[in-house]
Image (tube, rainbow, N blue to C red; front, side, top):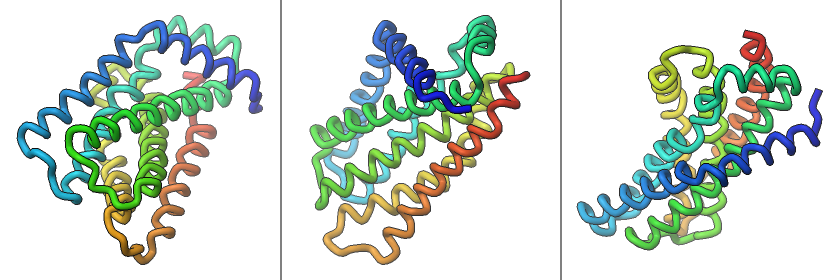
Length: 219
């Protein structure tokens, strides 16, 4: 049964841990800045399609570094403690919310660094930021769910790569195609259908996590 108060308490706990362990946040921020700076030195300010593709590839690896660790850093004793005090549904929903918020922040910071070093070729900034935030949320949902599965295996990092990339590549291509409309003054045909498809995928991932995580929780 969903308990909003429990979910918010668990989310607050993760936020407090993240603020106390700031090396993780600054490490990802350094990764964003250094990667973008290397692209700037090698390519200068690229054309629209290249800019868009590089942005989403960076978001993919930022998500792996920032979000996928959510379950991998919890020890067995800590998970056993959570098992005794909260339900699996509330626990997984709190993880999805926290990682979604974290990825939204990383997404905005990535765009700011990109705009500073690589220019801002976006014609419709509001549309691009909206799709960018939705895309960052989508990536965080997928990798949070995959991290929950990989946490039960011994080869956690390898399992994340094996499961993650075949699943995330179609979603990444969809995000590139949707966000490409923000670089053109002409409205792309079928654009809203693709947006609704992305939202539907997000809802499906949340539902799968809510249904399947209790089985992992019992293991």
